[in-house]
Length: 254
Image (cartoon, rainbow, N blue to C red; front, side, top):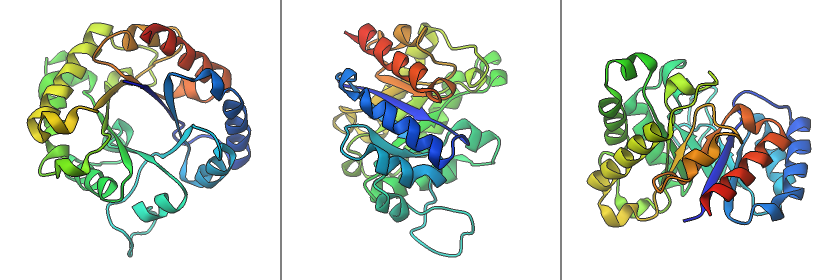
């Protein structure tokens, strides 16, 4: 199965910075022959990114969406608006949305359903906090997040689901999970997805690792049969570090 490496820029980069990055990464795309690369800029740079990436195999992703198609929802962005900009992927339920901005499992479920109904490919994030990990609750937390996100969804809608295991305690800390941690979580994700959707619906499921991932440690994750790529934060902000990470992932996955 093809690797998927997604860049989550969070609240970084102006339109000009986005255009410069996308032009340079596009120029290197011939090196990314075994990997699906996704760039997720902030909303203000989606159009600039899409224009700069036009004609390349690099996909455009958004960092969030709202579950309604239109209406009086100040500050929100609807699925049709993303589709109109050429967005193909959307991150849903990132820990910063959950823990800093108060998104609960019910909101994540509605966003996931809306994304699928509009044929946007979701990158669904799950992961435990440090306190939950120390209490031995990783499996319970990840299992609950995933079950509530997938509950009642039509398996026929799920063509290419991506789940990113992102332990909250590893995001932006410089402390990555171990390969064994990631493997246990990814295996659990696959089991629960099959339980919720049926084994046929998850045959194309891809599981990413995220959390302080970089060119130096990506290899130990994608070398695992349970991990199909990464959701990358800080290491995706510079072209050189992001390209190096992709090449390291390809080499390790061979």
